[in-house]
Length: 244
View 1: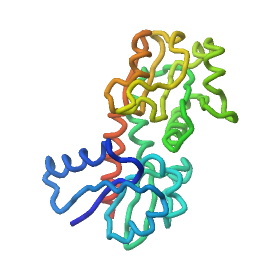
View 2: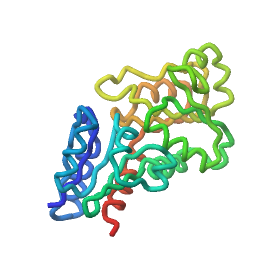
View 3: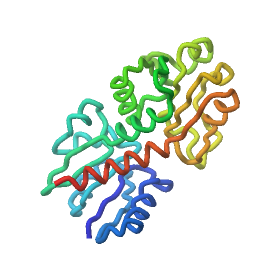
View 4: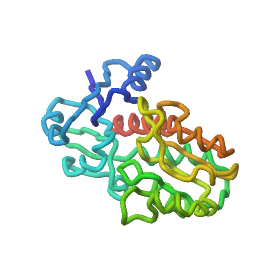
């Protein structure tokens, strides 16, 4: 039996478990299983990797913390500074980032060609790193918004100078705010300043329409959740695990 799985904490509402279980059944992929491995501490990875695994996905909060525990990093993952796929080959581990591919493909489909605008990335965690790399590669200028000082904008600055949003028409939420069951939560931005010329991309996918998306949609903004990105990154994970 080839065992694949997901590490992170918590994992109660994981997308990957059901996605891969359904994939194995629909595509009649034999002798494969996908399990959830909730790790309260990343140090537990050392014992987990002794379990003869075929491949792992990595989610919050370990996309950056996992890196020192791996034998090798793909060049792309090294440039991004975050890993969400681990390939196991002859007892060795190699880290990749499939978030990049999932986000890039879905973003290109979402925004009009030649949008010609700047982007705001909401959040500074591991998920935001792949998003930054995609925007760089697509030549979309961006700034980062954080609760903490030391980044381009704080949420307080954004709310005190709502006119900033006239310059940034693509807003990407990389935080977990609004994820089920805390569906009422959303990034603290000046939603009243949004217009029909804004595009809101929420990496959260559960619920399908987050509070962030609802608020933006009520102002006429175009909105999308993270489901397409997740499907894209999952399929890229499967491709990576099955490389010879």
